[in-house]
Amino acid sequence: MLTEIEGIHAVVLQVEGRQKGLLEGRYVEDLWGFFGLPEILTRDESLVGPPGLGKELRAGIPSWKRIDKLALADALGWGEISCGNTTLKRVSLTFDAGAGGLPTPAILDSLGEAGVHATFFLTGRFAESYPELVKRMAEEGHELANHSYSHPRFTEIGAEEARRQITRTEDLIRKITGLSTRPYFRFPYGARNGELVALVNREGYLSIFWTIDTLDWDASTTCEQIRSRVMRNIKPGAIILMHCGSPQEAQALPLVIRDLREMGYEPTTLTELLSDGT
Ligand SMILES: [Zn+2]
Image (cartoon, rainbow, N blue to C red; front, side, top):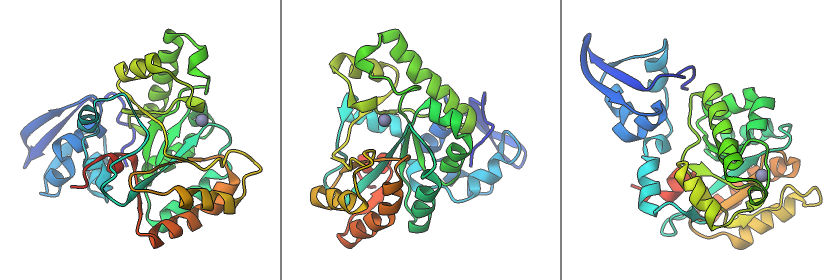
């Protein structure tokens, strides 16, 4: 996985020691999707970058990383989305990580065992408390997204503080994983208005709402209730809201994935959910 690439804003491609091209981009992650870098690399070319970068890139890269997220956001016209492509039987498991991280390793284990990649909306505070978990998410091919720094209600803070909340988290995640959280942002508590959606759009983020709320953050919600909420409301393109700090979610997750697959739905990252499937 890409780590320690802070400050790398361009990648030089070389073939037999000769420079074949200079790929520039804000983040190396963007380069993946944009230039189809992994495909180029499989033709035995080498990358000039931090030690191990080329080798790591060759190792199993999840297919969603080849999709150009910014082009997707442009095609969607930015704004806010609460559902993905409704023509495919795909759904997205999206985990908000704000509170505790104790159930998170079990959640990552279940995703790994099922071969599912999810999208994690991280707060900066979570990243500061659990940098190893954030690293693990990135290393295991999950998608990282932005959920503010300290989880305030954005309707109760000023525009400057709102921008600071987003930037601080982006910087933290990039420092830990080398990956950007763009272009996905989820408002804490879903508290937002048109002006705030426009603000996050200007910062380079789509506002991501949800189709199905599992209410797993509520300690009184049972594992069975989570399963039935998902299965009662499931439809193509559904964005399912879950939480990294929920022990019941950790318990329900393998069953939810099994239920979904039995009904012919495949869980994907948000990026795959928003794409046209090609
Ligand atoms: Zn939250």
